[in-house]
Every structure is written in structure tokens, then in C-alpha cells.
Length: 457
Image (spheres, rainbow, N blue to C red):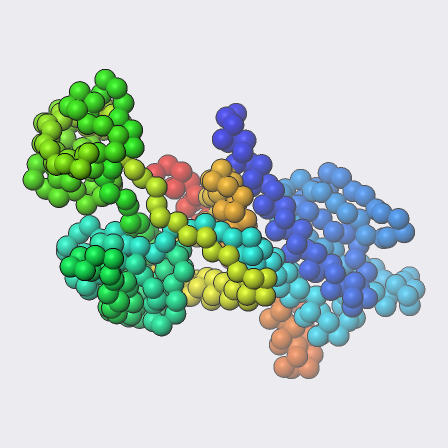
């Protein structure tokens, strides 16, 4: 068992445990407020591995064998014999509570998932989160971004009149517009090369409708021709004995051209070198305040099954970053807005899956979620908490879908009871439960299949 695999397992179990406990606490807490007897609070499904009662409480706190879920078991006369029950016991019967109390109890689980997401986002906004600035790398002159007027080095200030604070903020706004097929009015600040230290502000139209559903299954910004802005090709380090060192390159040198082709930035420099194993490259270099030429022949090296060129240098690669931090009240508001927007986006994606506009390959299961948990945990605790918040929102939305077996299915029954004035007959509920279970199992099979395909690709 590798350390990375162990980290992934621990990160997944910890995240899942928090989400399950918080969800079930919603059901438990509101049930107790409504006077319902709670017989068991279980983290996990299946056979109980550990059961504990605390003090005079009748609730069994349980850890069960299958960690993919949890449940709260109520005192319910539809499931147990109450012929010998006392009036006090019957007062805690879930099925005898008013329909509005039952709605509140069932809805509390998903609502607590949304509350958890709001809290995590608000805490992160208050603490401050580092993020790349919304500065664009536009490398292709045939890309949608370039033909729309965007240029390399443009700093995005707003989209459709809404301020843009960072790269993630820009990406989020463009993703929402793209799914709606709407046009993006992008305001950018561009350095005026004719007037040093001066910038021009302009608004350009980016046609998001050109993207199709398949584009949103990968990096849609790359499809538009937009990437992170990279620093110039300035050498931070030159390894002694390597091809660059032998040619006379030194730390601090900036590569301006290769074979008479301008070098856009450090990424373009790396790509041009990698694409030229054993091929001499004539480089125009700016170093020590002077321009000069050197000829460097990259060594052929095998990397990820391919032969690439290497000259043993480390070009500057640090992205321009900004710190997003807000007062507590503003953070709480932004946390609510982010949770709402993410929930709406999730519903839109589900709708597009049902209509065939978006592939079902977007459905992910526990293997992919565990992989993301491990990746974000290794990046840092900020990324990990953002991951938990997003999964909590997904869990809340999925549980509100009107599928029997899920919370949303029960809410559908109770809504019909409100409209008709009488409870849905048990035989129809049982039939719906079987159908809902079948739908859920099918979705799980699709998710596992997608997980396996992703792992193999």
C-alpha cells in the first residue's frame, strides 16, 4: 500500500464521514424538535459494528459496515408493532406527526448539507484563499478568444457587468454563461505598448454559444483558446553540464526568440524545446542588458513514453496570484451566493443529461470522488475544504431529486398529501420505492462504469 493511496483513503473517509454526519444530524435535530423518538443514528449502512447509548438517551449511536451512507431510524408505527405502546410512546411516532413536521424533518438533511457548504465557503472567504489573477494567455490566433478581440496579457475586470476577482471567479461566470448559451461581455485592461505604464480598458464580446456540450466535459476555456497567463521565458536556474550551460546560458537570461520565432512565455519556451530533441535551436537571448544569439541542441530524453528535448534549465513558472479575503458578513453572503449558484448549475447539468445535451459520462461515483479527495488533500487544506463544500452541495441537490428512496421522493409524497388532504396509500408508496431503488441502482452502475473508464484512460 503506497503512501499516496493511504492518503487518498483517509481523505475520502474523513470527507464522507463529515458529509454523512452533518446530513443525518439535520434529520435528527429537527426530528427531536418535533418530538419524534429517534431509535438509531447510524454512520454507514448494513450490519452495525459498534453501538452505544449515552446516558438516559434511547438513541443508539452506531457505526455500520458499509461506509457509503448513513440513516436515522425513527419510531414509526408503519414499521413496528405499537399495539402495546403507551400514549407517551405514541406521541413520538413519526407517522402521527403533521405533514408539515414530516416535511421539515425530511428536508432538514439536504438543508444541512447546504448549510455546511455555506459555512465552509464563508470560513474560506474570511480566512483568505490564494487564486491566480484573471490574466489571459492567448496563444492561438485562430482561437475563439483571439478572433473575439482578446489578446495575450489582457486582465479581465468584469463579465456582463459583474466584477471578476480572480481566475476561478472568471471561469465560474463563463461556465454559467456557456451552459446557458449566452454571450459574455468581457471587460479587460490591456497594457498600451505605445504608452508605457498605461492601460486601455475595453469591452469585448465572447460568443459562448460556439461551445457544445462535449466541450464542458473537459477544459472549456482551452476550447476557447484561454489559458493561465505565464511569466516570460526567464531562466531561474541553469544546470551545470547541461546543453544550456554548455551553450553559455545563465540564470536571469530571457529567451526572446527561437529560430526567428517569438517566444510568448515560459510555457511556449518549454513546448518549443520539448518538440526539438537532437535539433539545433538558435536562440535570441536578452541577458546582462544585451541581446545575443546562442545555439542549443536539446538532448533526447524519454518522458511519459515519448521522446522530448531537454536543455537542463528551470524557466520562471510562478503564476501571478491574488488573495481573496472578505469581512465575515460579506463572506457569509458570498458563501450563500456560491452555494446557490452551484446548486442551480448542478440542476442545469442534470437537466441537460436528461435531454441528452450533456453526456452521462459526467456522473461520478465513489472511486472518482475518492481520487479527487486525495488530490485536493495533497494540494492543501484550502482545496480540500472547497472539495468538501462542493460535494456537500451535490449531496444536498441529489437528495432533493423526486426519486423514491431519496429524501426528495418522500417530500414528493408529503407534497401530494398537502395537495390532496390525505396520505398516499402504502401500496403505491411501496411500488414507487421499488421503482426508485431500481433507478438508484442504475445510476450507481453508470457511476461505477464511468469511474472505471476514467481510471483506465
